Image (tube, rainbow over all chains, first blue to last red; front, side):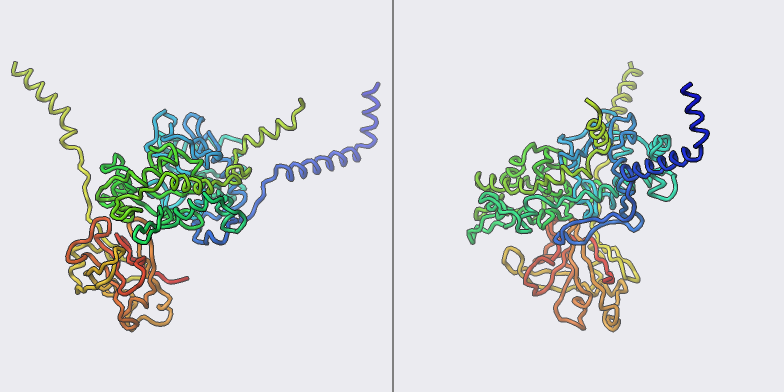
Length: 383
Length: 168
């Protein structure tokens, strides 16, 4: 009986019901667009003026909001690895300033990489990538960890096939590149776009440069030592760290032999150039978030900042390729190494901790998008 | 018996061979590449530098002592590469600059007019010797020496590249 009554109502008001349904669908799709819609258009890269504008964005890969959205998904996408267990984020974890806390990282084949996972921060200003600077762009760099058999271990062709078989990616590639074709080149470009947005500019040191933070006495002492070259003749004590790590970004694009070994196991840039002067020469990394990126050096040999400062202060190894500015730089007249006092070392480490940017490591724009979704679901699900 | 000896020797040779023939790291000779707004790109090795007129400059280094550096006036090298110097250094060519790169990534620039002898008598040279000796590996084999400049920061060591560019 009831069914019949409904049937009669429906037949009488057919047009009206359809209209209401249509309106409902329109409202729903609009709501879901606002809720889950992907913003499009140029991505504004925001950074302090004192970072300078010598940025590196290739003309054929401008940063867009939709490109960054896709790049972030791909950065956290485990389908890009041979056994679907690793993503870029496996070795570049946000809470560790995009490193992995290991000396060397394990690939899909359980073989260790040969060098330490590098922090990803302020790459917008970098022009050479990897510990030996062999890649000239993020786009070129991204190919290696994805395809190296001891890292993610999967050819771009297979990655393209796997992503093409998903629901989400062809649509996203269409949004970013104008058509739904997925290519290795486009994968690398999107990941690079996301990586360029990883800007760290709110450490205590940044705040200090903006007169918004008053460092402690210890931090100030450490900062002075960090910035000053020693001159024992004039009774000026220093550690001269800023020679390579100076400037508001605490990053200069330099490559040095920093006296780790007399005969290095890893030839560094020499392996590329064949030049003896490049032996044991590696990239001078950013010191941004350095307290979060242990262990240190290209092979992760030092577990703590204390060990690092001890190295520069007391344990530099002589060799022909040792960079000149590290030779005979001392706080003692005629000394061969810095010979910092124990309290001075502590002061420098206090300053290094000022370079930690907790905004950066907690920024939801850089976090795992899958986890965010899961968290959202968890929040809304009934208890 | 002879047969076994042969097999043993053959096996021994088989195992030892990789160690004997292992590629030694071939040490290449450093050079300076001259590129950019040039008509003839150059790749200069130490021997090539000797083909130019040699000059000397005395200046203080970070050790506070005077040293005599010898090498070639930078503009002579640029002229050979066809860079717009002398009578051609006018108009838009005055917006050109020279970017010098070292093997450690350090870079400095000179305006082209800073290098031209019609503009200045100050010499800027590409040196390959200090006090008559080859530069130390960590300084050389090529180093820019700027005469009379108070700070040595532009006396860039381990030079690998000289690129002439237009300011944009």
